[in-house]
Length: 317
Image 1 (cartoon, rainbow, N blue to C red):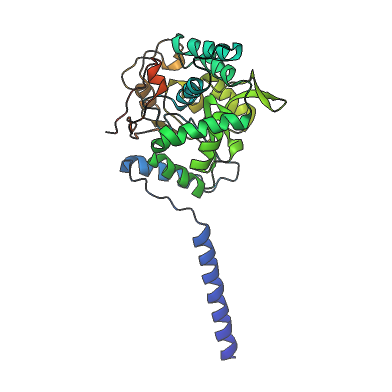
Image 2: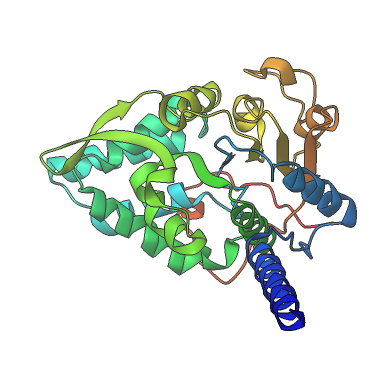
């Protein structure tokens, strides 16, 4: 009888140890993000812990340029496109090359480089190339001039989201095929969760037909409902162009390197009369963080050669 009781106790102890071990292997653990202050870490950890009991789909969505990696001194999408144009079409007299360079001239000398009309010009330029050719252009540009621009803090943040079982999506106003390969390789995000400006593919080649909604300004909110089909619990951005997307979040809003100089006026929406930082300072669900975005390396930028305005440096406080 004593032997039987001993065996029962031993079996119970083993069962408890196995359950404890299983819990330890599956429990979510927040990893402190060294480059951000304690207050930001505490708020992020508290929010992520609050999602553990959620049974529905958990989605986080991020802008790309300026949010996941640096955009100083120039946007990768522009540098990749202009560099390709210089190497492929500049100085040639055939009709096709002249048509492509006319698009480039319109981009360089146009009124702005952030609106719907501008992203349409990018799509028009790449029309005629295969998705793989466009992906190679973007990937080569990243490795040549932007490889050191991925924010380490954002990589750590994404790793935390994965730890908590949260789906990660990217929403960018840059051409989708141009960004998918290098973003997937660098951040491990599935290619089909990297959404950019889409163009119709016909007979294996891209066309100048943009697929709507276009993930630019208010279009980012529409893109969430059209392609992702879930209200996100976390949305991250860095500019006025991300406001509508970030307002779709039912939980946390992560604002990276917000501008606190420019007063938003034209097409400002609810942000009119405020800087980006002032707007998000008012939101109790917004967490403002900073990542170092300064010129790096001794690179020659075709964007600069063609006279396009450089993006503002964001030196980490």
